[in-house]
Image (cartoon, rainbow, N blue to C red; front, side, top):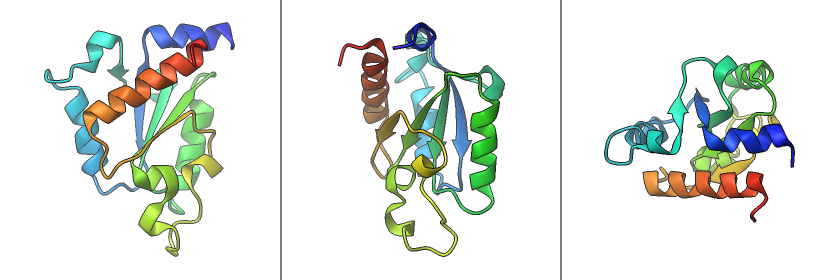
Length: 141
């Protein structure tokens, strides 16, 4: 694995890209930042600009408006950039699979490094998903 990618595992800076979510996944992501789960002790911090991010956290289903925005965000992120799909909608479009306004899945637009399913996934599941991603990047799995 690339040394730059391994270096990212020490302190992950995350940018949250909301592709028309229902807001349940977003609430659980914000719960991660509260003192109860406190993911900042692991070096995970939410940043306000994709240009400072190591990880692009995607929730919701890309529609015709957000699919171009998601591709632009990924192109603006410093490379290498990890992409994490959070929630059933981002992982596989679930009930929006045959929707007229859902042209494609997240992994058809950007390369997804990890999937965290659930509707919405609990904070514990998100932490476990990030730990597995870090182990995968470090080559331990």
